[in-house]
Amino acid sequence: MRFQLGRTIFKIIVLSCLASVTTQCADRATSVQKQFPGVCAKDLGVGNNTSAWMVGCGKANDAGDFYLFTWNGSKWDMMTGFGSDIAVEPNGTPWITNSSGQIYRGKGNNQWEQVAGCARDIAVGNDSVWVLGCKQVGAKDFEIFSWQNSQWNQVEGAAARIAVEPNGTPWIVNSSGQIYKRSGNSWQQISGCAKDIGVGENGSAWILGCKPAGAGGFEILSRQGSKWTTLPGAATGIAVEPNGTPWVISIEGKVFRL
Image 1: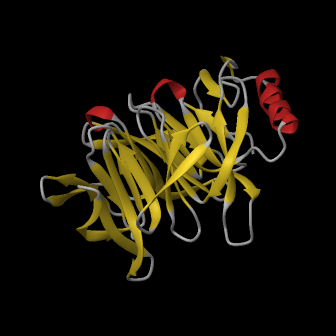
Image 2: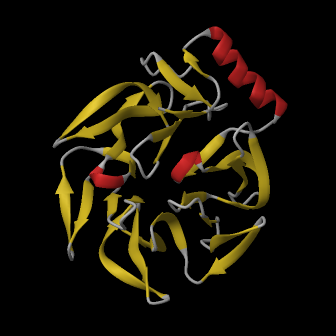
Image 3: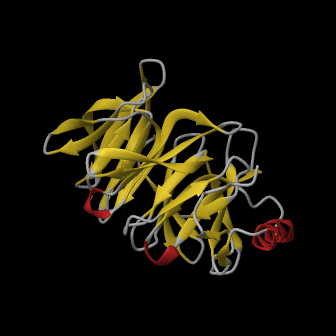
């Protein structure tokens, strides 16, 4: 499937390929993938200034981990380590979890520092880290924790996906598709149904809805005031820059910046 956004202008994998949706531009994206085999995405995290990291499609082991890549401005560079989920601080620092639930924070110079705990999903803001722990609640949800005072503190509730605003406010989606935003010491339900979520500053939120679209993808929606607006296209994953700009993973594993 060619990922059709229905917009006149967008950026495809090669971020300099900013042009109308044409065969030439699409072919250029395909060419870059051929030059760097296996560079498609399973998960994606973005920070400021298009600092992007992804968990690629190339298996690193049989346990469910994949190789890691970062965007250098013209292509995806493979990095050391591997993981299953990734999130990026606004300053560009990556955090990963692997299939064993181990948590790592990037230290620069292609190095990783292990952080205590066990996680199935992770989200980070400015000086804030939230995870879905390894203990399952119900059929498909997991416990929720926030990192405070050098330790993990459990927060009530359970979820399947989590995202965090730059200011540290978490949003969650549970296995039933219900959406919640943290407000004080409780969760405030937000209308809508989601499979995945990404949030930026000032409450800007994007989701993959519960309605299937394409062969294995889901519809893309952005929150406008108190309503969700559907965009053309389909995706399997989503991440949002601090300024609210979304990135999505197409059904083919290609990365798009909307």
